[in-house]
Length: 184
Image (cartoon, rainbow, N blue to C red; front, side, top):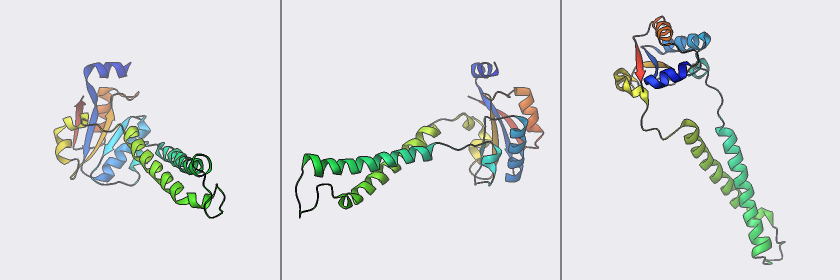
């Protein structure tokens, strides 16, 4: 029931601002241990172990790339087979019509092309991009300092464990510089 309540009232979540990466990492681990699952961390630099701390799981981009590359491989080989064996069969220098060593460059290029296109399209689709607006930019501190020297942890209102008062109190216990509500 909390999901619909917060959706109606336009609350995206609660965000805590930290000065040091270790503080953010500790807060993220405690939040995950406390039962929060829909949260995200924003940092100006990579922090080892942060993805595990917020419960980031494996994505399906690699599976999509494998499927795209396999389809490109089969498509490239099938196209050349169809051209040389079925559509325009010509006997060149006494070679067989299905001379597969000649297909290797085109098959490889089709594999790489479709795999790379699938990687880019899959990454955009799974990340929900393009996204010209995100609610976290409603926080002026986030807009000013997120890419410079501050570390942020945002617990979303759609989390099943989210309760505004309890979540704000939980984040305040982590000794942040500030805890702020994020409007949609």
